[in-house]
Length: 429
Ligand code: AMP
Ligand code: GLY
Image 1: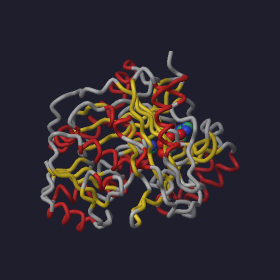
Image 2 (image 1 turned 45 degrees about the vertical axis):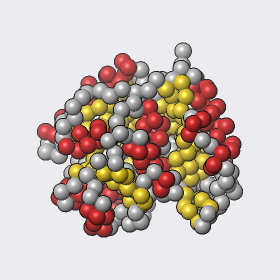
Image 3 (image 1 turned 120 degrees about the vertical axis):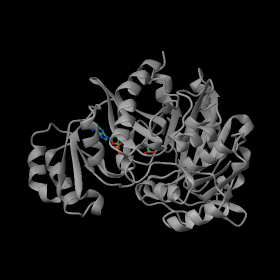
């Protein structure tokens, strides 16, 4: 099978890496890819938002299956265009992608289907005064979300009402998030551990991948600003088999069934961002694609031909309800550019990559890198995902392996958290 992976981050490198190990894959291309994917796939330099060009490339390479990584092209309808061109695609169409592209849509969807989530109300620009009045009904902290895509920055947790009123005004007046914030969700603040669950869906059925936890904050101890994710680990011990069974029954099944019944079956990776509260598991958000960096720790655990599963999903013919996993743990430490998530410099030469070897149980996934002559240089906020794979019952050693590898890699201003995976150790009996 010939596969095209679309995207250029750590998630896409992890997908390419896993698909490279799939016996059923004969050719891999990555559009546009990065210096990590180029070793395993043919990178084709086309900008993803040019849907026609992406499809032309796929036709040129006689691609059998497209796998779309990021949410932006999914929400813009790239999966539909690809299917219309007669190419199979793992990724939801524009209607199903609203589950991530519009928080207003996804909250209403959850309400219609009795899927547990935070109490909420939705407001549009004309309803600014109602929104401000609603704030007085809720305890603080209160959570305000831009409904549209905002690159992970559209969620503001306000610890007092004055701040909340300012946030509501700036979002609804279009100052803060432009069109994405012209509709907002105001919701109850929930407390608990967060878990990411991925369900590979064929529109009607699904298989669940091992649960993961990411570390969204920039500083150790989950302090400081939110980021795209500073590291992850899987399987998350807090998500027991019992809990996953419960999540399937109360969240995944009604979501997949509800979307099918409403006429937009979900094909692709349904990401349920969950929070384990005192009053039960609730959905914080859905994403319509694999999570990053979670994918970097989840895919190494899959003990099955990934290409086969993705193709079955794309064809609407998932033939099994479960796939096997390795009896392993995985830990990903993100190395970021100094200053991230605020301003940072790029173009720093990365050295030491050749000292980290897969045979020692570590894969370095590229996220924000670029080739410059013979060098690999930094080209983004999150630069590398250094991922160690070890024994399932020895998270401590997997964590140590990841950090030993991190220490071998250097670039000017490199920053990483030093407590990735710590929670997995802390919560184990
Ligand atoms: P979202 O993009 O909706 O997942 O939100 C991003 C992050 O904001 C989540 O991973 C949580 O850490 C936090 N968050 C979102 N909604 C809530 C909520 N209702 N209560 C507490 N934290 C939240
Ligand atoms: N790790 C969070 C996300 O992919 O949205």
